[in-house]
Image (cartoon, rainbow, N blue to C red; front, top):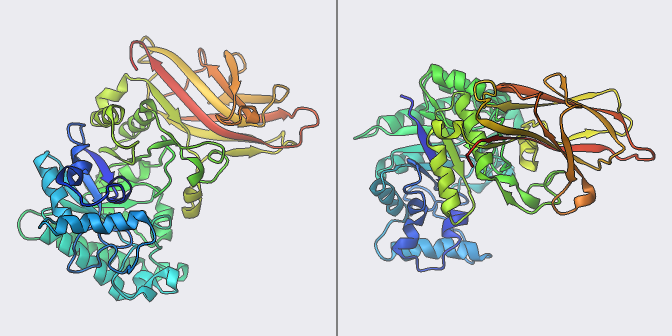
Length: 487
């Protein structure tokens, strides 16, 4: 049965075990849960594995057990923070589970399935092995999940299939994928039955998956079959480490197939406007990290609600979670809250990680200086209804950032086939660090408005300024919708 959820994910590392100096007191141990309390978050998801398990497992290897010495302070803190709790009779995982239940939240244990330690390391693809082709790998991951779902009072497990390649190894070598897709599906069947048929209350099974059917299949994941057979209670379409906010995640195919089997869809709302230098690319190299604003996150959530999502999944908001971040989380819990509120839509930008998995995004677009024939289309989705809300919408602004643009360049820009030549235009400085690097074109849309649903912005170079031979790069396309009397 589908359920509306607002989900926050904590990976156990960056904003938790890496941070505190041991010994860890109970207030610090409770922090990941406590900071989500009274925010509208009703489901807390905790990443239990990355290079080792973040609890004292009897099946898998605890993080740091294979390290005689620690090469980083983060590793040292993880080991000693967990140990400081264990020495006082506490289980580091049980502490969080119990706290979540005290605060009225469901608790799901999320496990990176491409990461496994404590078994033969030569099985890993990075070591020349064949990954999940080896039965030992499949059995080990199943046994860890069995321990989590039967020895701990969690409400369910989350199968993190979307971590490769940024967060773990792939599951199969390319030449093995076709043959072992059915084997992976059999494994999902087995785990789903195991968790749902545990003693006592049945557990639930969620899964992080890639945003397109093709990417999933190329990784050995037959998501359509999983959904058709009802093996999952929810799915989260995402790409690990692709943190630039994407209001246009392609969820329509997932919603259609998931809802046919009463499976919920919780799309990921990414936390960053600009991810900074950690994600190389034309949009990220000259900017330090900038978190997405509340209106940007609101726009993404509004689009997902409008396209049939059952709830919202997010993570890695600016930390520690302050009042702004808590307000963001409260706003995600109700689709009615976002309808009449200001929104800042951002078209999808590529990143290093999206490129690695073949997740195609429309931006950036490079236009050669001599290319005066090609029309470049940039699609985006808008959930606002401009006809119904015409009295309450005070302003609509279309912003286009183009690197190396100068005043003498001549462009034809249309929105859904209508020219923007007569719309009021202001030119602003380009990049936030190097202001001379390009320009923002900021159109106040008065007569040519976006439409509710899918839109298409077309850009054509008519003439490049004299003696200029560098390409133009369309870096960003954004739409800001402002309502009267709102923020």
